[in-house]
Structures are given as structure tokens and as C-alpha cells.
Length: 169
Image 1 (tube, helix red, strand yellow):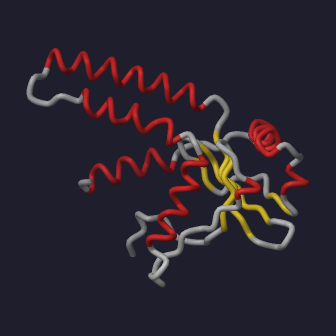
Image 2 (image 1 turned 135 degrees about the vertical axis):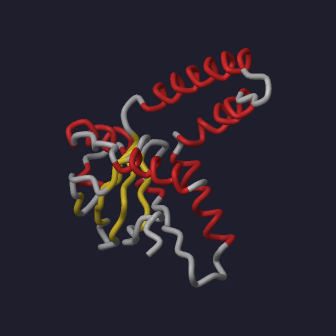
Image 3 (image 1 turned 90 degrees about the vertical axis):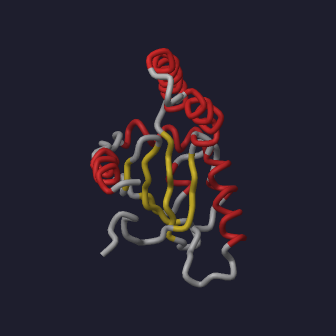
């Protein structure tokens, strides 16, 4: 993308306010079928990242492994569906006004891919596929997925300290 778009999107990305722990904890416990204190030896209730679909916490497994726990926001699947309905509507309206650029195929592609975006099992499997494809490279690290602590709405993976992808320096 052009630099202007990257800068603008980065501002939006960085300004997602985290949801309160009282709202997120029940999701983890319902999804994993146990209290957070049973699922993790340590769990920091302060999120380390918040994005449009989920937020991420730092935790530790019983064996001492540091993990990142990605937790989907409540009701996000419905919100994504509503957003896609609005995008479809706008693309149809635009198609009547503008005949050169047709955004309807893009809207259809977004609708096809949306279910995978809100399914962390799919995301975990994709991470494992990427890890297999890049296994012979020593300059790429893909976090390991801990399936016994992962569901469609909670994804537990190796915690890897790093930098933002936009921090080129």
C-alpha cells in the first residue's frame, strides 16, 4: 500500500481501546470450560494488544511456557456480518453510480473470507501450515499453537517478543 494509507491505517489500528477484563474473562472461561486460574499458571489481566476482532493477553502455562492468549470480543461475529451487509449495500449503490470500478466482487470476496477471520481454529491451523512451509528457514519464527487451550474464540500460542511490522528502523 502507499505510505499515506499505511500511516492512516496504522493510526486506526493503534487506537483500538481494550475491552475490560470483566467482559473478556467469561469468554475465556466459557470457551475453555474452566476458570482462567485452572487453565493458566499465570494470567495478566491487562491486555498487551487490542485490535478490531480480539485482544491479546500474556500468560504462562503450568510447565512455565510463556504464551500469548488471543480472545475474541463478544458478539464480534454478528458485528462482522452487519459490517459485510453494509459493505454489500454500499457496493451495490456504487455500482449504479460508477461504471468503471465495480466493488461488488471485492465485497463478495470479503464475505467468503469473513467466517475464517472469526474462527481462531482456522487461524491456528493456518499458522501451523505456514510453520511447516517455512521450517527450513532460521530467519522466521511462527508461534506454536497450544490446542488444549484454544477454541474458535480463544487462541493460545507461544509468546514472542517483537516489534511492530511498521517499525522498519
